[in-house]
Amino acid sequence: MYQKLDEPKSTSLLGKYIKVFLVVTLYWFISILTVFVNKHLLSSDTVSLEAPLFVTWFQCVVSAVICFIASLLGRHFPSLMMPLSVLFILTVGANNLCLKYVGVAFYYVGRSLTTVFNMVFTYVLLRQKTSTPSIVCCLLIVAGFMLGVNQESQTLTFSLQGTIFGILGSLALALYSIQTKKSLQYVNQEVWLLSYYNNLYSSLLFLPLIILNGELEAIITYKSLYEFWFIFIMLAGGLCGFAIGFVTTLQIKVTSPLTHTISGTAKACAQTVIATHWYQDKKSFLWWTSNAIVLLASAAYTKVKQLEMQRQHRSSGIGQKV
Image 1 (tube, rainbow, N blue to C red):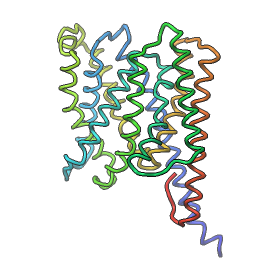
Image 2: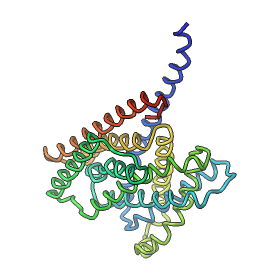
Image 3: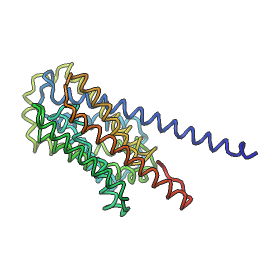
Image 4: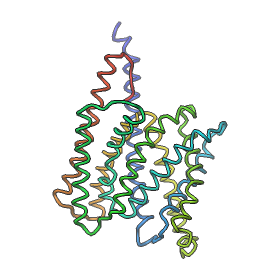
């Protein structure tokens, strides 16, 4: 009798795990594809357009149009969505600028501080204390990041500017993950609706940034602006931008900001291996060691947080998402 009573719960739990697995897998695939497409758009000899914010803005416009068509729009939350949109443009803008100046292989280490910033902001904004083991893991991530920067600085592909944008992108992503979880409650957990408002407001916010960054002249004088191949690849980048924004929000929804951060870190490790083979980059032993330190420290941080949540669950009797 007890087994029969437990069957629905077990089935529900299995379904939940399958759903999480599928969402995380989809996030990995789309995210890696987006990175390679954006790298081609931002710094390839084929495209050669010095307007990274314009490329990002175009992706936001495409995403907003897709969401507008796909969503049933009934309510408006301009004041609630604006903070999320500001964090969104900081995240995607800094990420694309980082990707423009650094290689795809180093892009992982360059943005590896997201977990550290997530811990800091969780304490500062949510007033949740961090355990000593978690702090140790974050310190190891910082050590791995510094070693990676040191090793990359000895190569011809190193870019201090790109590294700074990577740090800024990590900071913005940590805040964006926390704010996304909060914002979903205002749109009845509708990912499509949140993506629509987020990309709509971001499209408007990017316009003055494009002008301030001096990209108008580069756009107007670009010879291939109206050629089919350029429009096609821009639309492909826009579709990828929409997809990554949607699956990122979806992953945060079905898991948590912490799990999303760790998933992104692990995905970036696989991305690094793919990039070194694709671009035939030869890296030193210490360079790979820095990647391993960041990955293992991030995995340890995840395990520590999982154990802490299990203890909290047992003590409070209230289930939490992991």
